[in-house]
Picture 1 (cartoon, helix red, strand yellow):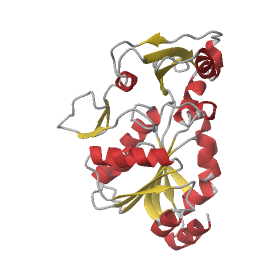
Picture 2 (picture 1 turned 90 degrees about the horizontal axis):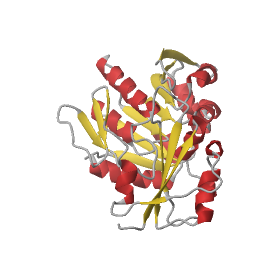
Picture 3 (picture 1 turned 30 degrees about the horizontal axis):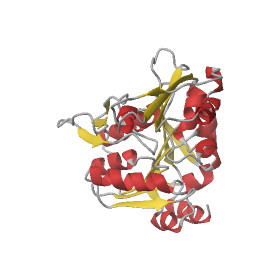
Picture 4 (picture 1 turned 120 degrees about the vertical axis):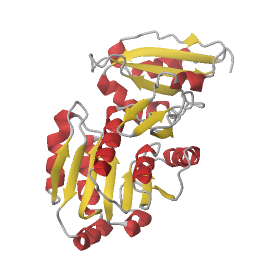
Length: 306
């Protein structure tokens, strides 16, 4: 693409950056929609984030103002974008994503080289959330790796709110004989997972477009001895009865997408459902490992009602 690619950069807070992990209703009518990438330039300043919006074609002043309105802390009344003369705007939007290592995993975008000594995944940055760069995703990868090293064996895995499919792919590489299911409320996300599965040579992954766990395919495949749910704190709390009910007796639940200040509320919600906390990683974005205490039969029946 030539001089028709443009970029708008705005400083933002962490809370403002989080909203870009989901669809933005305020921009839903734009075609083509901008690619918006939120990054944390300096880990030592965890509330100082940055939003880069990439446009195919010169954006109008109205569109720029609509994007800027999503970042009120920037206090930009008349935002301006800069042309990107000779570069591909999607490639540029991915260029800030450096390869990430978590446990035995190496996660990269297509413009970086693979690592032969690691379980290598190539995940294009784009329409779905979960490239491995965010601490919640990398934390889940590290947690899965630690479970494998401790000798855990799983035969029925669910990645709930899968995003790019990365966590489902990781579980399938670690437990190669497991039945694996990945679900997401967003049909675009499931289409992205399908493409990423081909890109990474992943097969036999059952994909479901579903809001929660009431979809017949998810009910039929329950109970799961490993459920991964990297979502957000409030949805995790709201969905606690259904998620906990889908976990087999003595099964494992990996929860992420929550801040350290939200962990206690999430843990309480799942303890009420008969689960216990087995591990909590440290840091601003902790990952929780919880273990089911109820017998599988009771949980299967509860899951079918969720």
